[in-house]
Image 1: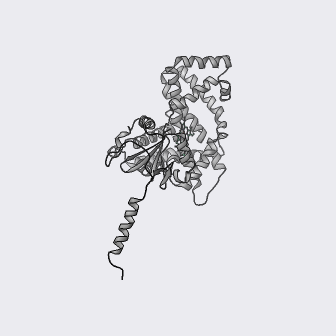
Image 2: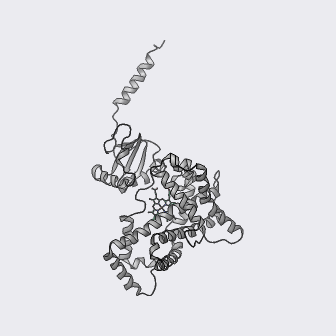
Image 3: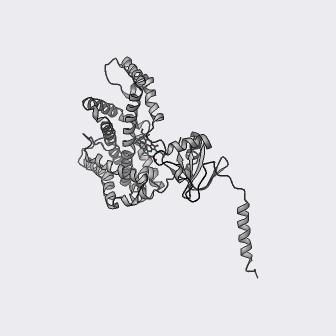
Length: 368
Ligand code: HEM
């Protein structure tokens, strides 16, 4: 007969072995406070500043804890490629964003989607529009809209920021849905603005008591992704198809068993507008700001343009290769003031070890 206390001995031995087992150390990182960890070490309005200080202090990969969540900050290209590109099976997942994702329903957008099968299809469809080859088709449109922006700025220089926003919105709406817009009062733009405002509030320092009723959110979100999509479908049915990402995808259906193809197209297109509009507008404004802050650089760029074009026409995308200084100024914006300096966070599926450091079920923040 087995004595009653023997399972206790086995359990104690098991625990002892676990405790004595040599564990891989955690990556270096700032000291953590009990319970809250590093909650107050990362400023909400400028996390990058803290991550940059930590990079100098702790190196390429920094460990922190926030309210029990393990987070690593990937600070170098090497660590990003090693983990996110070379181990995609573990690091391609998104964290669950309870408010902005689950409750507001934005987890159907590509950047927040955790349903892997759907996400893969969305990325496949988005890459039709965003591949190096795919983007060439938008160059004439970009050149036309740049000319419109310049003539509008000549008339209303006081509306600089608003006109940059309008140009970005025009570009993305035309590419995604074939919709041309005149001004910012357009209802598609107004609906998108509502969504950006709600999601920004919810992502940064959200307070539950000021959250609008979720029914309102659902209504705004539905309008944002459904209305332009239904517009394209109606146009196609009426035999009036304009070239756009949505009409291209709907005319070349690639159904996948068990997935709703139209729903995938609808959310892929919705994400394009959400992801591409603000980032493009911010980049445009950063460029103008940089030129205003550095008139000597602006003068050199202008001189290169004048020498090459001789005042005969506006520059085109193809001219970039012949305008090295202007081209360098454009690239500098993506270094100096990139619109999205941190990538979207990733969630690891399983514990991992990297360069001898233990990465136990972590969230990854890309800060390079
Ligand atoms: C200067 C302009 C832009 C910047 C700086 C930028 C930056 C980024 C960044 C940092 C991410 C997150 C990547 C990650 O960590 O996983 C992202 C995602 C994305 N961006 Fe952009 N972006 C820009 C313009 C655009 C445009 C014009 C479009 C489309 C028309 C677009 C579509 C997307 C999409 C669909 C995703 C989600 C990808 C995924 O989660 O798989 N972006 N972008």
